[in-house]
Length: 517
Figure 1 (cartoon, rainbow, N blue to C red):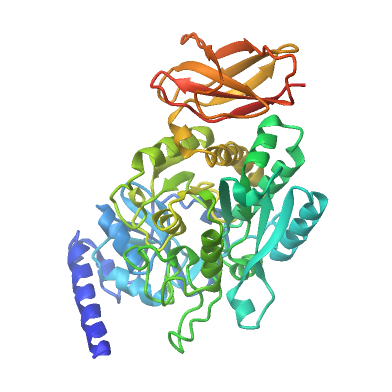
Figure 2: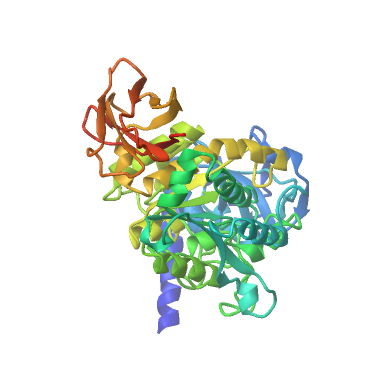
């Protein structure tokens, strides 16, 4: 009975997809005839593909023209791994059997591969960390800063569970004075998708930056003392080992033999989370790069991240790093509807976009995708959750390691801002102080950027101990200025001065710090 229902559902879905995607007639697109070869794209910007060799993988890189976002979602449902989206076309790769499904849709399809079944081979620059070199670095840096950092094993990979390897998901905890669990927390995730190799490097650089600048930079010192910071550089170690060999590989290495004896390899970890799993924008075919798994949280890797987040009740903010497209994304991904915190997501996202130069938008504005990290960590755990897509179409998934310096420059301000707002996410609605400069023994100048979106009305400062917004020493601001100077009238001043600004709308922003001496 169950098999009959599934067969009927499959027939109905195929009929529905054919109806939904009939945006042009077969006469307009000969590729709907499966006996007709795909035409080579004549005008497509091939981006990073121009510098890549192609190899026979059973996957083909295609360009598909679309007329509405529902068609993009259906392309994902049919198994296309969408790489980049423009106003009227998408480029990505698709496995052979799934390509036949897309060719039946009446959408115009062109081929960027030299021939069917060939896809781009990635390049793993020797500057990038392998799983082994990453682990060695994590052990070294946590040993160097034992009072600030701790390395934890938060779960096994699929191959480790099956006895085929010995790889774990590793998390670094960074926090200063006091008990970490008593403070608001933030978690950064890298490398859900194996081939997105730059997404390991940014978390690693963040670990080093926070530890090396503690006690030297007042803002970072305060962040580390006031926040429990968790960083997981590599969520997909098994898949990453394939990327290290130059494979254009996205998923983990689950063999899916519990689904079918002839199943394709791997599950897309960023379609395997439990909130609104399998409700659109992912594939039920194991050969697809966006295969969502046989069930929500079917994979050891997503079970590990889920259990980690659930165990740390103090987590307020989450950032997941991906590549590419230069985007800042937030929930929902599974629905075009806004979240109850849509205004706050937009306020934070717009600031992140302004600092990085990336485009901020709700995830579903790109295309529908369900079972993603952000939707789970926000929808179930109420964390303000974001995804950063770093790099451009020209960079691809595997840019030269020399590009990491640019990505780091773009993403460091965002990472530090996210740590700040973990201590109070409503501070995103207020103005931010860019810099505090010490003028003399007791004199300081606070500088602020263009207002977001109001002028700065006043600042307040605290010495050594921070109070609630509005309880500090108040200094009014001339609204025509972008800075204000103040003197601390305390001879027994301590080690640190803390400053926050208030907008003309009455909303307070994030806290900034300076050493007194």
